[in-house]
Length: 434
Ligand code: URA
Image (cartoon, rainbow, N blue to C red):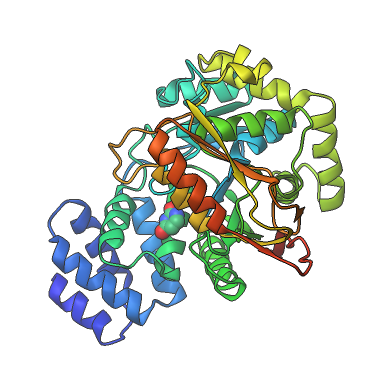
């Protein structure tokens, strides 16, 4: 077999065999195929698409391209959760302890962020002492002892995806449904889950810009799940405006901790309850979704979910006094208000633009070696559908650079769209694809 034939076949809209996909994934991972040949094949896939069978083969080959985490000691219903990405998405920080408080094992390897804001691991590292880089042995022991561990990717999981994803980024091939679906599912399969709940975000701050695309991606991932024998549920959620009120690393940790202490922001609550209810169902702890949501609220009200977060942070070396007293988190030097220039209803706060803005003041990274500024970000005070008076505070910019802070204030003022006519608050949960 040779790569030129494989490229030509996809260029000519023909279906690639399992062997051809396996050949490409294996040899590219070993650096035996050049980046320009891989780029040609990825572009041909981008333009001509893939059949369900091709997508499943690509997923499984990428999943098996590196180490595979074996979580079988925790039984057949190991549930994992993944989001296709968003702005202000602190759901894993909240949901992981909630699920563990039911006695459902949570063994989760999460990623760092690239782009707008940090990933779950960057956010957790803003808790002083919290160690995300422990051995797989300790990771498993933590889950055995306290039912939960949240760490970075210490194993070499799905290295083919890492390589192909980095390449896609440089050749304008990120927004392809077969490529996104196989990328996400390969990592979930390599991370040991056999039941998967996916938060498929949809809107300006997400890969999928509208409901139809999000539904198509969901259906594609469900088909992969079926063919790979991993039960999968997709929740389509709105990412037109940021999720919750905090965007930025330690700011989001604080919002997550406050949530577990019963200060629950409505949109975050809806996403947490929907995803959590399906995770509980797939884990075999209750089939009734509405009942499951009530049980989650009870775990928050009794403090069990918060206590699980404390246990997790303590076990992984973090200073739990930051959870008790969130005012201890490092505060940015400048905290500047963003003022409404007119009266009216908020009609739009583009999640993408807010994400880019928080990245520009240091909350995200453009290259994976870039440092992250844990204390900077944005606190929204008003969201879509809210009424504001002229001169009322819309948001605060938290920044460590005075010039950047001033520019960010102006930019956020432009991002907020205010109109005279009332706009209803958008639905957060758009659909569930079971
Ligand atoms: N998240 C991933 O892991 N991969 C993609 O391709 C897109 C989002």
